[in-house]
Every structure is written in structure tokens, then in C-alpha cells.
Image 1 (cartoon, rainbow, N blue to C red):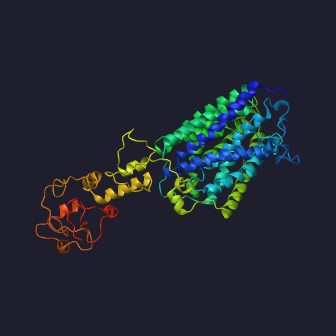
Image 2: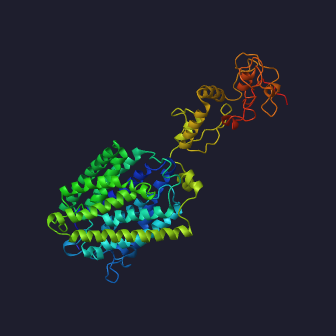
Image 3: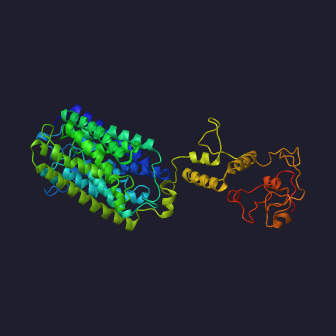
Length: 568
């Protein structure tokens, strides 16, 4: 068998582009989740690469593109399990659609599709899945859902392929399949705690935009590579992909502008992805006019679809259903209108083809959607009743980063919370600060940057206008540390006021002045006599709130200054 070196090189390069899309998807999703869950999202996408890569070469490829079992177009046999018989041509690819690339190149290219499809599901169940349960679901889904659907649509021996349904690069196999699976799992695991009452905004939109750009770049391999040759059809798919994506971006932000008066960066990124999704099944069957219309319609329809989940109370966290399911359905059905044999495939309604092609597309959309939803729900239920699928409330509020992986994505909150300024180059940022004789060991900080920010806002609200001044004075003393005050004066650097000779440490008995309350000449009630400011500054007495120490001082033990006499 003779292979074309140019076609082989293009398909292998396209396979690499498609693999690069999965890290791009991880960043796209990771920027949209909260800070405490970003590593959990990245980890789910990366573990899919490892899982599906192994499952594909051992089993799934043979089920998807192997010799048809029984001639019914339902599933393949295990003839190619473990990549056996790789010198044989892929079944069904003969005649006008005969391949000019080695079967192994085809295996690698299709493997990248099998990888990114289950990765799309992670957006529906963000912030609440157990890592072990997720691994079990994806392992079963890659065999029981993706492989049969790929055989129906992509393999020339599949029943939907024989029916005449057209899907150039995966609108039904990838996007409708993953969209319905995501909705099934979102229904099964339930809402995130606090949704929709608590705001859950994206924590890093630049990451989302970066991920969208990577997806746009890699999608050229996804669509144009599906021509399986470096030819005119690949070039047409390339042009259609870029045109539809640009049109969908404009359509989404225009819809936002009309609805809310603002066009957002998140909308631009989501619109680009919606256009990529919609043109995927149609890029090899429509001309550039059809691609433009498909992109504009997909951008507007998907933007409107993002609000549907609130009506049904469905917590599809990152709008996988609105973008991938709705976008995939839009693109697949519009082939029935804009498909033209001048590019490839059959003629649609607008080119004199009648309603036949539209009917075939509707059958493919409905069958794949129902099959994916039912089987995915069954897989999720099986995993849920055995090893568990959703984290408990404590782990969810803590965040998947620490509860599932014992890591945090960002350490900036640690520095900000301690209020320390460390100059660059002073020491290695990865090395922990060691306590010295003049620097006390800092307490362990167990809250994230978000929690610290909320805590600081609440403290400032309680303290009122004088809180900042008190903070500066208290921080000034704390940074000097114990033992640093010069003993040149009786009370080491404090203002030269007369200090009462009988000071008492903080305790249940604070002297007659405190019990008696306001004395003549005192400016504050219940603060223990005329020398209260000096005693308070030394930390030897508590606040004047009648037995209830202030919350911000409760966890800060004070040491007496050198030279202060404290009775036993």
C-alpha cells in the first residue's frame, strides 16, 4: 500500500494540534472556576489525557473503528485491540474515501478526539466531584459511550454513516455527546452549595482568554485535519473554521450588548468557542457564506442559552450545555440548510437538496443525545452508589485543590495576609522563612486569599474609622518584637509618661479601677484609672468591654516588656 508523505505529515501535525487543545481547555475552564478549585479543574483535564490514551490503544480504537460486529453498524470487534494488525487498512475506507495515510497515523489522530471529548464534561460538574469518582466515570464513559457513538458516525461501517448523516469533525460525536453527558452528571450530583444565591465569578479571566486562544489555534488541526489529507478540502475546512469562529465571537458580544448594555471578555471567549463548536460538523460541507451564517447564529443562540439553566435550576457550572450541546446541535442541523456538494457531501435545502439531509441530521442529533444522556446517567449512578461521586460539604467549602490534591494554586495570599514585604533576591521564595532571635515564628495560615480578604473587610467594618490608626500602632509594636525595646528607660522606648507602680497582668482581677468603672478625670468608662493608655500599650490589661476581650486580640498572647514589674 502506498502512502502519501504530505498527507501523513499533515495528519500527524494535526494530531499534535488537537492534543494541545486539552491543556487549552484546562486553562479555559480553570480561569472560570474559583481560586480554591483551579488545580482540581486542571488535574481533571490532565488525567483524562493519561486515562484515555491508554484505554484507546488497548480497547476503544478497536470498538470504534474495528471490523463491525454482526454487520449492524453498532459496535466494532476486538480485532485491533492492543493495536494488533496495524498493517491492515481501516475497515470501510475504500474507493473514493480510501486513506492515503498509515493506519497508525489514523489511530493517533482519532485518539486526540477521544481525549478531548470527556475533558469537555468537566465544565458541567466543576467544584464538586471526587477525584476518584471522576476517574472511574471517565474510564467507563470512554468505552461505553464514546466508542459506540464514534463507530456509528465516524466509521464507514456505522449505521448513522450509512444512513447519510454528515459530521465532518465531531459535532455529534464530540460536542453533542459531551454536552448531554455533562448535563446528566450535573443533574446527578446536584447543585454547588450556595448556587445560585452566592456569586461565583471567574477568578482569572486572563487564563480563560489564554485557553480560548489555544483552543482556536488547535481547532485548525481538529477540523482541517479531519480531511485526512493535505488538499483542497482541508483548506476549505481551515477557512470555514476561522470565519465561523470570528462571526460567532461578534454575534455573542453583540447579543450581550443588546441584553445588558455591555460586551464582556468572557463573552468574547465563549463566543469564539461556540463558533468553533458549531462549525465542527459543517466545516467540510459548507462554503464560506454558510460558515459565516452558522457562526453568527451560533454566537447569538448560545449566548441566549446560557440563561436557560436558571429556569430549570440546573447547575451546569461552566455552560457546557449552552455552548457545546446547543452549538453542536445548531451546526449539525444547519448542514441540512447550507450543505453543498460543491464543497463536499450532499446538497442541503438552500441548494436544492430537499429535506432529506436535514432529516438525517435530526435523527443523528436525537439518537446521540438520548444515548449519551441515558448511559452517562447510569454510569454516574453506579459510581455514586459504590465509591461515591461528590465530595462532602466540608471538602467542597474548603476547595478541591486542598481537599483532593493537598495543593494550592496561588501562594500570594500568604504574603498578603501576613503583611510582610519580602524584597526580591533576599531569599529563595520557595524556602520557608526560619524564625530567628529577633523575628518570632509566624503562625500557620490556614485560610485562602479569598477568605483572608473577606476577613479583613469584616474586621475593618467592626473597627470603624479609628481602626486603621490602631492597626498601625499595633503593627509597629509587633514588628519590633519582644526584647527589642531599649532598656535605657524604665519602660524601653515607650512615651515618657508616669506609669503606675502597681501594674497587673491581664486576668480575672484587674484592679479596683476596672471594677469601679468610670473615675473622676477618666475619659473612658470602665477602663481602670488614669494610667489606662500606658497599661493598654504594654498589653498588660484587657479592653474595657467587661470581660470580653476583643476578637482581634484573643489569639495574640502578649509578653511583658523588659523592666515591667508584674506581681505573681
